[in-house]
Image (cartoon, rainbow, N blue to C red):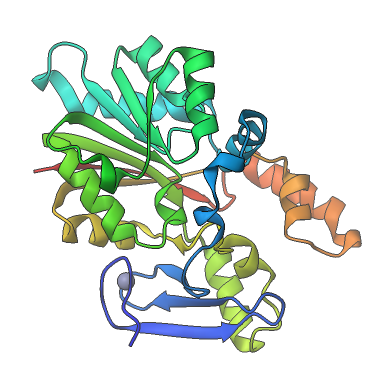
Length: 297
Ligand SMILES: [Zn+2]
């Protein structure tokens, strides 16, 4: 029996495999998370990190930084500061999981006065963060680094949806926060488009699978789309309190590039791009990510 990776419930409906990619997406009827149940484990993430140069890494960082820019970073960091409040007078300590080239940490340090560090699993990233910003990152997985009650804030920018075992990651985050410390994470949101896409895929027995195939690709890409209910359930189950969730309208790509990535027929592209641009400017477009904040009790 499949259990929901978010709420741990058993009311999981497994969809048909995509006829294009073979991927199977399941959904939870309790918390409405949508997640990959096949393929199960990522191989790409296990690839040797020695083979990746800083230049390769820079490209990877740019791909990974979906929907995130300095505005999003500032919004989140202001939110984190407010949540930490006055409990810690000087230089609160912030740790960024999967810190990339350290761009976010530079902002948190220089504009918000945090004492910053983070980790990366790729050596090239660590070199880049040191050279560009003078930030020292740790090499390796959180589980091996063994931090306890050490940080006022931990941030995860689009990390949770990439890992096969979200619970393990969040348990490590919980352990490394000091009591009262705050976690901030951004993760892909299950929107109405994803719900409809998954329904179409089910109804066509895997034939119409473009949207789910694009949004849940596994292998270094996303494995789960959360709802406010699902991320709240997961965080509370693992001992976090005061969970706050805000869906966000953040498109990193132009509308045209985004639609191209969904691979629509050519004749549809221009009118759709126009409609999507209008929708974004009028703020009715689907909110494809959620910002989430919670506290260690
Ligand atoms: Zn669930």
